[in-house]
Structures are given as structure tokens and as C-alpha cells.
Length: 136
Image (cartoon, rainbow, N blue to C red; front, side, top):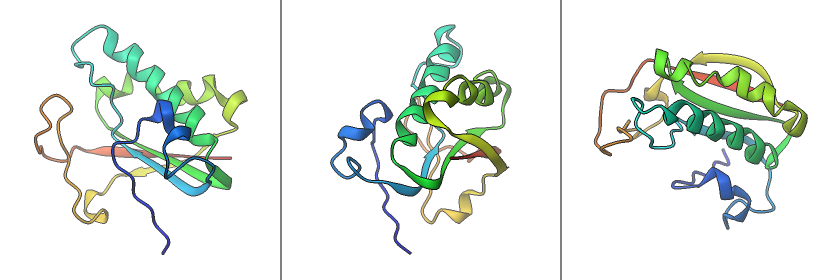
């Protein structure tokens, strides 16, 4: 397996990241993206919808033909409000990414995975979650 894992990558400056610029990948995975705006704040939904659109726009530039973008989100009403499918559709003309599947997120498949809270950076129980899969 040829796998490259990068942490602390800012999706808004993805192309400027030294390990990513000028490269294409078969899969790009974003597990539990979040802007850090507390979910109880009014601006949380809008900021996270924009984050999803940025993920679609910037990751698409680095996917091989037939490559997949995988975004994992909690299966929770707060995250349902982000309307991931609507965000994908809003930028489809720019990205060419279409939904192909969704599957349950199984944390055990990621050796050493530790789910943390956005607000406290402390380990928390891994939530029930869905991985949304998009491809060109």
C-alpha cells in the first residue's frame, strides 16, 4: 500500500501544502471536519457549510481521474443541518464530484484513531458516523 497521511492540513490552503502541491491522489479523506465554531452558535451551520464547499473545491484539484473524496461526519441532527449533499451540488460545476456511496464509519479500521472534541481537544467516545463518498 502506498499511503500518505498528513495531519493539520488546512483545506483552504491545500494546494500550498508542501506534501500535496502538484500531486494527485486516489483518495482524500477528511474525518469529522469542523470549523471550531461552537455548535450552539448561530454561525456554526453556515461556517461549516462553507467548510464543506471548500473541501469539495480544493480536494477535487488533487484527485486522480476516478479518485474519491471521503468525508466522515457524525450522524447527528447538528451535522445533518450542514446538508452535505446540498453543499456538494452547489459546487458540482467547479468540482465534477458526484456522490457514489455512503457507509458507516468504523473507527477500528483506522489503527490508533482517537476521536477528539473540537472544543476541548480531549478524547471522547467515537460517535455514530457516516462516511460520504464522492468521485469524479
